[in-house]
Amino acid sequence: MPMITLSAEEKRAMCSKLAAELPKIRELLGATQEGFGELCGLSRITISRIENGSARMNWSHLTSVMFVVVCNRRTKEYFYANDLLDERFLQFMQQKDANIPPEVNIVVDVDGLRAYAQRK
Image 1 (tube, one colour):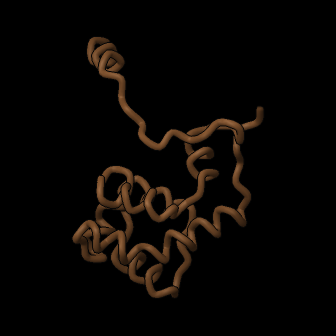
Image 2 (spheres, rainbow, N blue to C red):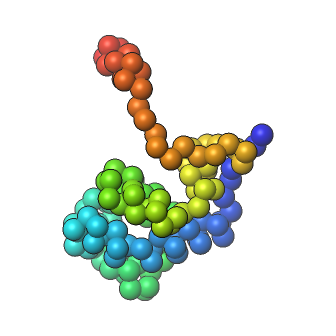
């Protein structure tokens, strides 16, 4: 089966949907625009412009924001509870085909971690 691919239009729609949630995500983190930008590797001006609609979120912005979201329990729970990005996003990021559901709770195998640590 072919892996999920996302069209440019799908990516734009996902960016738009997530951009609308930035203020709530920042609120959950207790972060200012500047602090949130620092977490994401974006400037305060970029965050501000995305939030007020004078700039569009691009795919690079989205992936930076999503990294912060999945590293924080509150924002990750908010993301899943509100279905911010659909299953196709997760399938794409996890390199799944359309018939394989995405993994929502990725657990790290302790034995695998030990094996990596021993190789160092």
